[in-house]
Length: 265
Image (cartoon, rainbow, N blue to C red; front, side, top):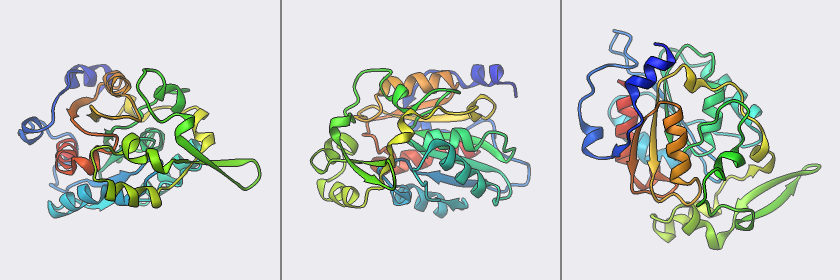
């Protein structure tokens, strides 16, 4: 399906997560006629790891979907995308890629040119066009509280620096709708991102040829909802919204899993 026609079909109007996600879908987007469910690939973002997908993955596995949640190295856009592309090359059959936050940069690049990828699902995620950067998209609209002042910086190697969210800000900035006991553990085990990723330009975007879905977190303090809506609309994504922080997949796992299943049909 041509991009322009897909965008017309997808529309840009956002609806509330809930009954809309549970409604039947008239058209199968990934079906090959064999009845085989696509493999769902869950990609985490910065300051997180694959365990953030546990609530979503358990629901998908229960419903019979093959699931893999590979590590995202968080070293650079190009290197992380190449790493994921290598993993995708080992998987057969249809694929649905699901990304959170910075993971959106990675899947947007890694899926390009892979004919097995039938759908892209973005959850509070970056959806870059070619040449755009993480920092540019994050600051395109006001509202992000993930500023330089919110980060601790730790050098590694020669001239390389990792960024971590500060302990006293992690809950309110990253996951304000989760219990503080939970976010204390998340902070302790957070995976840092190499600061070079902030200004590294993205490559040719897969969303120009692959149908996409987007879940907007209305209470996101990291990636402003206005930026999420802009990127979703530009990509022609089927867009839904939830009252959730930056980690909608943890705060709203049932709604997130329902959106993924909708994209996988």
